[in-house]
Length: 273
Image 1 (cartoon, rainbow, N blue to C red):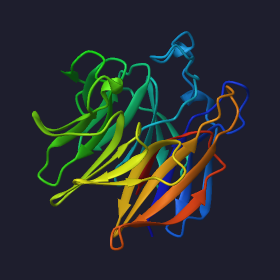
Image 2: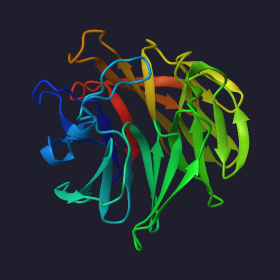
Image 3: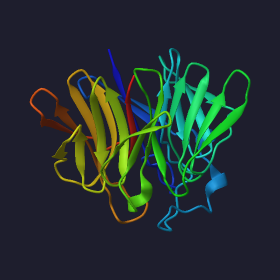
């Protein structure tokens, strides 16, 4: 049975809504809540702000990846390791990191990290402890990683609204579309992403308005369904937003369900495992 892992923004005011991740089953029922792990909190970033000048919380679990035995959760400069079966916390991965890491991706013995503020993709060899970096344009805001069916690293340059978002497979730009996009799935000839600025799901050359708008981030696919994360972000700092999962049926090309996710303040990533 597949599990849907969801991470979300925490708050520096205590541990309310501070979870490492939550787990939904394939019927979209809450199955498990991974309780706040203080070691994952990253106090080294307390003086850092986002590109609009707003402070970032030190506990903001974001990117999710996994292998046969483990789940890995990124929080700024740290990556936490969790047991894939029991969800128990097993410590920190020893890779170097940066403030505001977004998605991460493990492929064999390599951990890739979207170093969003650093404008690089980290390439960390877990066998040799060696790290190299793919350098990207300044302020391109790389945020999403995907491994293609033909074994290439794919990534998204959000571009912070200055121009269309750019999508790469290896060194080749494959698409330029949308504004402030998040997430990427490539399957066969199909292309899926979220145009966060315009609040749309993009599939190939088609676009679909996400009901209710808000901040859309987090995209996962299982069978003929897409799951899209939505946060109706509250403007009052450190208070909960209304978060939802929207289900999009690829047979009918329509949104068919909406599931409330009250356990997180703001959805940062979602992955089927």
